[in-house]
Length: 326
Image (cartoon, rainbow, N blue to C red; front, side, top):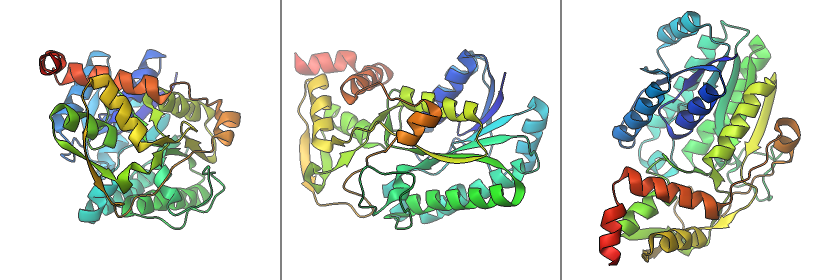
């Protein structure tokens, strides 16, 4: 049985991962700062569900090294999955200091803490954003990642460089997972699919950047969790993996799927390309297939319906939508 500490456990991926690890018999404890980047009520609801499953989520800042050391010692932690981070491209344009504090100072804090426990294996969240202006498609872990388009991607690239330095200096076991546009139930409200859904339901216009001529490698949360668990079990000394669906989807098609499921058309506000965005993300998952046995199985058409079923239930909208469409 592994004994796993998850940072950002009340977040979207952390919540699903903790639940899956517990169900398969691992010991799991989480920590989260419960900040207000998006509605803390959603994070509290996730943490409450984990509590019913026997998983504690401690309210803790990742920069509090002494408190994290105590958690590691108290619970005999064997693995750390570091998911806590300041996410979002748009937010990085107006709040750069949040990314420096969480994604750089916070990341170093985690590494400095666990380097004193040489047997601990670290798996951490990187991002497809590291590929930045990369022109080659699909994106391979062998491609250059030194031309970021936004600060968020730059901090994630910095994480990979810093992690390599700690591996080289201290022999720390580190595995980076470059996640590609993760979606699903209990997702983040700042993500496009969630934001579009809410705006369509509320009758508000949705902002469609680059007139919808963008593609994203939407990856369902269950597939991401399976890939992350496979990386935990591999316990590599140093690796980087892509975890994506290997199937880029046009943004307008995503909107169409949401419209069809809700039975309500979107009011589209067609806009030019947003600063910091890229035209396409597309994961080359050959390495992940070979080393992790990773094979995404949930197509967007199925996964978005799972999300919408949850969205209606969580927001109490089933009756409301039925009345609107009557």
